[in-house]
Image 1 (tube, rainbow, N blue to C red):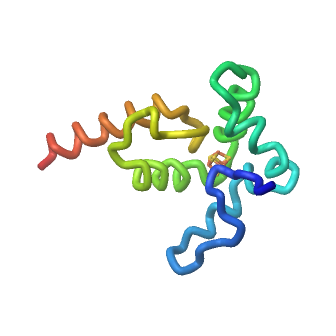
Image 2: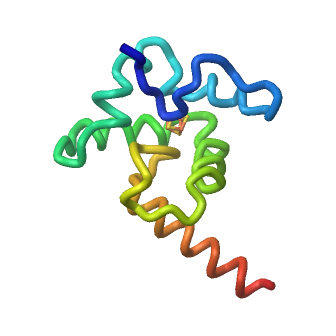
Length: 108
Ligand code: SF4
């Protein structure tokens, strides 16, 4: 079985400088084993999701993680966003995307 991590990367992608993902708490061996039950927990598992979010908020690469989620997920509907990334749930990331878009358009 292939374990999912928030990035589903087995090796760092040095060509794009994305090796920051290896510094994330979710990439640590003890947490990689628990990624499915924490970062990918179903929405009914509130305790597990809360633990993933807490860990994200302690993560040294949270900003890079969230920036990448914004870039990769783009305007995707919340139903097409999955898991906890950068400490935010899919609906929260969609709202953040909309807010960033509003600001970008206002500044243009
Ligand atoms: S912020 Fe969360 S999802 Fe992102 S790398 Fe850190 S622990 Fe993983």
